[in-house]
Image (tube, rainbow, N blue to C red):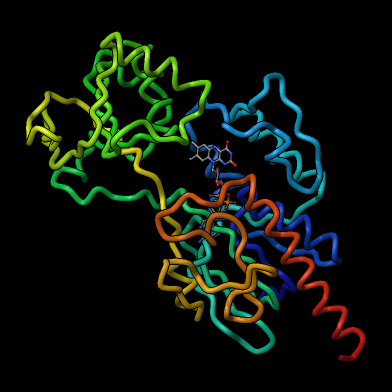
Length: 331
Ligand SMILES: Cc1cc2nc3c(=O)[nH]c(=O)nc-3n(C[C@H](O)[C@H](O)[C@H](O)COP(=O)(O)OP(=O)(O)OC[C@H]3O[C@@H](n4cnc5c(N)ncnc54)[C@H](O)[C@@H]3O)c2cc1C
């Protein structure tokens, strides 16, 4: 069985950042990724631009410069790919970890490759950086499982001339609405909030509000979709329930981290929905298991971004570096 000193699960920006920091304290971690480098970002809307400026997305101190003031998805893919290659990070792609348990002198990680072949690794330290993007927040309403419903928006072309309901009021919902309206889709945004979310990119909001004012996009506040049919959806708003014709639903309602194997490996959950971990080291209540990135956030909150999660690796590396230093000195 493959024996490692440190394994990072997930090659998102925060997992890559953690691996670079671990390299700097003398470990050569193996990153195990169920798809490929920065898989989540590769699934983001094709033409999106980040809300962060490039220097706030940098990892390992490697400069990220872009043509415009906000990086595109393609520029970010290129940046993180290059950062991994230049640092010669060891990445085992297309391998999903499904279990972690305590073993002699560390942990036993089990999983499978993309052909369903079982694999196992032993490691002294484990950094979990599995993000949240594979687990959208479900609506739990009738019709949600229909093919016309998606929790992900990639491109507008498939929706030309279609009646599309977008559920949500975040940047993802606003960006998708604008892109869809541009190609001639009939867009209704259904948002449970009282007013526009304060997180909407300030340079995008005026354009969106102007589309709403002109009637090009229909914006419903204090409203929720209560059921989805083949040709319509039911909405409950301040004036009661009503039906609108509909071809597609984009439920852009956010994501939540899946901490299944975290809890299986003994990491406890706090009442607020956080996994138990020490802020200063990111070590969980299970010594040797660390968290990096979005997986450390509350269950349904987007409180950790690349901007902040990219620094978790430094804390982890510092902590592991100290432990190793102490054992080298015989303490
Ligand atoms: C549309 C959009 C725009 C955004 N814009 C910004 C922005 O401008 N600025 C900003 O700071 N943040 C932004 N964010 C948030 C940011 O992208 C996330 O916070 C970030 O991706 C978190 O990084 P991560 O490394 O924690 O997780 P992820 O990037 O999700 O990476 C986790 C990785 O783990 C892998 N994985 C999961 N489970 C397993 C498993 N069991 N075994 C092996 N591998 C596994 C996944 O395939 C994935 O590659 C945006 C998010 C979205 C959706």
